[in-house]
Length: 160
Image (cartoon, rainbow, N blue to C red; front, side, top):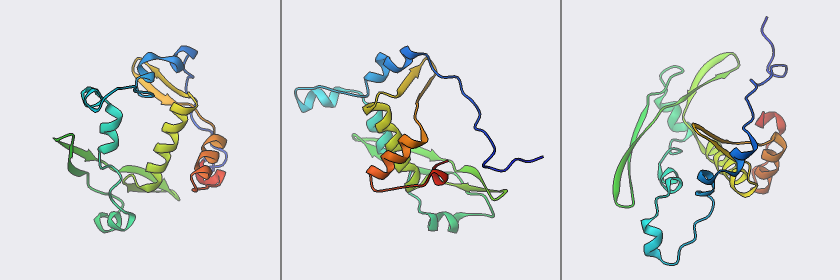
């Protein structure tokens, strides 16, 4: 028997211990205090590199033109960050819409959600770091409220 989407429960995950939310590793990405631009240039900031990666560059119209049935090819993109050349491979996610599979690249909605989750992780100290796993704890209400504050309201059904 197949359950409808409304009755399916999300898989439970083990909540990290309290000290994972106050980890020194995570605090390294929250605040940098430097006196000069030269000091800033010498710092390694992985978040800055992550933000420079062109991962949300393909519009839905472009995706449809590249689509072969339900599938999309991986996209290789080159970019320059701090005078160094990098290449990123963007693979589409395979999603289920109305009982059929369809691949999609991350788009503007995913970029917005990433920004909101990062804000919750840093500003509200909801981010955690455990040896091989990091993340952010949040409620649907918190996500809905932050999206609305940015002018991108969503219903609970759209978020869930």
